[in-house]
Structures are given as C-alpha cells and as structure tokens.
Image (cartoon, one colour):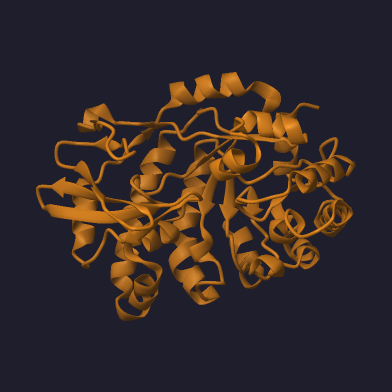
Length: 380
C-alpha cells in the first residue's frame, strides 16, 4: 500500500495496512537545530514516517484587478490598486519586528508581526475600531486557488504522501477558521468581550471572513488536494465556552465545510485545545477528520478512549500523542508504550492517524524513531 493510499483509507474511517504515523508539520527550527538543516522530505524518510507536504496554491483573480505584490519584509501577497501593502522594519531589542500597512481609498489598516527563532506572532492587531471591518469588506481581495499549480505539485508528490493545505486565512497573518481568523485580526480578549457587548458586529465580521474563504473554496472544484485544514485553537473550550462555539464558530465554519465538500475536498477540523465538551458539536459540522485531540499533559483535556467511544464512528481521528512528554522526557520504551496505548484507545477499528497533538520544536531523535517504529508495528 502506498503512503497516500494509507492516509486516504484512514481519512475515510477505514483500515489501511497499518497505522499511519506522521507529524502535524515539521518545523524549520527543529530541522536547523537537530537535523543539520535537512529538507522535510528527508525527515520523513529518516524516521520512517508517512509524509505530509503542505502547499497553499493561491492565485490572484486578474478579472477583479488582483495581482501579486513585490516582496517586502518577507511578505508577497495578492493586492489590488485599492488594497496596497507596505512594510517597515521596527527596531526591537529582542524580536525581528515588522509593521505592515494596508493602503485603501477608505483609510489605512496596520498590524505588527514579530519573529523569533521558533515562530512568528501578531503583536498589534489589524482591526482596532469597529468600523475597520467596513474597509475589509469593501477592499480586501477574494483570491482564488491556483488549480494548475496544485496539479503540478500533486504530480510531483505522487503516491509518496499526503498533500495538505488550509482554508486560507487573512493573508498577512491569518488562520483557517472564521472565528480563529477573527481572533487574529481583533485579538481574542476583545473578540470574546464583543460577543457579549456587540454580537451583531462579531457576526458581521465573521460573515466577511467566511465570504472570502468561500470564494476560494468555490474555485477548488477538481483541484488536486488531499486535505484542507479548518478551525483553530481559539475555537477550543480552553479559550471559549461551548455556547460561544455553537453560536459564533460552528455556524460559519460549517458553511465552509459544506462548500469544501461541494468542491470535492476533504476537511480536517483543527482544535488544538479543549475538545471534550464539544466533540459531538464538531462532528455534527461534518468534517472528514478532527484533530488534534490534545491530552491533559499538553494543556488540554482529551481522553482518547472516551472521545472514540462518543464519535469514533463519525470521523477520522488525527493526533492524540503527547509530544511534550514522549518526544523529550521519556525513554524510548515509554514512548513506544504511549504509541501502543493511543492505538488501543482509538485506532483498532481504523480511522486513526497518529501524530503529535500539534507542532513540536524540540525533540530527541531517538524518541522520534521510537514513535515511528512503534506505530509501524500497529497493524490491522
């Protein structure tokens, strides 16, 4: 069985030849620090994991006056004459810091992004006043999927792995889910307060973001892609209540899942945080898979066996493995035992892809090997 066939059977909630074993992503920091700058493909080959290749094939809608900007401060995005982006380097004692300014006829918006050796994050949010969403609605480009580029990438990938992408977020810095994207643009604290103070404004913002994403999904018909990520950790019950999830996250993201399915695409709903109170709510949105099933040791709440008892017949499970403990602070035998425990909890009937419960930056190579070796021993 090829790696792609193995993944696709698991995503269909069926039994492949063995348990698929992978990682959510391979972080550049890990490759630089532990693998002498190896390529991601080499990482999967070295450890015998099932390969995932991330690829986001965006395309300007030239009929709408869109085109690629010049690269500036590490950013090259899709712009129009009424949505232009400039960047400036801001001196900072600790972090690489850039301010991105969006210039429109209706006014300017700006956000600040910071970087360190591990990752990047938003330190100043884009939407500072309620009326800023009017600028977003009027001028932000609704870009498309580059089907030809996706097909070329898929052909190069072949059967050696899974081609994975995201439902696009805001393109300077954004996230796949509507609620998660809004949290990035507004700030999660302000967004939660607005749920109570001005819920109509929150839903208006979510609808603006949904419509941009749906335009992209409509352009994905017959596009060669294996799996699209949706959701985000700010939609987890570590951050918001089930009531907020069901009123503000689920309705908008459910529309995206339906649009993706109409375009022939599979969707995994990503909730890197608390999931147990909303397991059935997420499954009812009809994704093909759910992740990350983060355990208590990584700061969330998932009991894999209980989660499988409740929704194991409805979706493929991805994740569930405590990388903090078993990639850094255990023996190889303890890591192997945890793999077998995860398999017994939710993998015996198929429909399970074992993976860390999100990104990892640091790991002991011998524990990665134990993780992958043990998973390949789990057969149906």
